[in-house]
Image 1: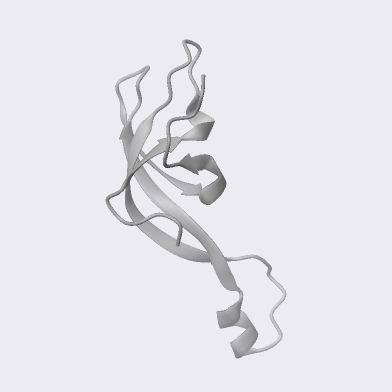
Image 2: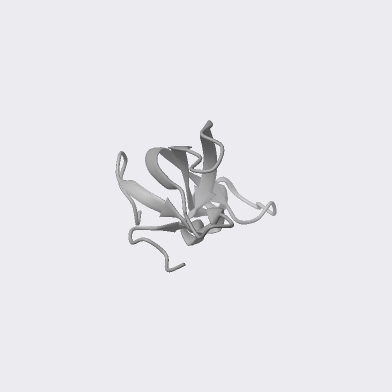
Length: 82
C-alpha cells in the first residue's frame, strides 16, 4: 500500500478553473481484481492486487462534502503544480 489510513492526500484529478486542488483524507481501502477470467480459487485470490482508496473531502469550489473511490494514480502526497 502506498498510502495509509487517515493520511492527507491531494486529488490530482480535481483541478479547478482557478488552479486549486481538493485535499482529502483516506478513510478506507480495498484490493480490486484486474481481470474477470478466473480458472481456480488460488488464481482468484492472487488476482486482487490493485489497491483503491476511499477518500473524503470538502470540494473547494462548491463546499459540498464528498466521498469517492480513487486509485493510486489519482492521489498524491505532495500538492500538484498549478
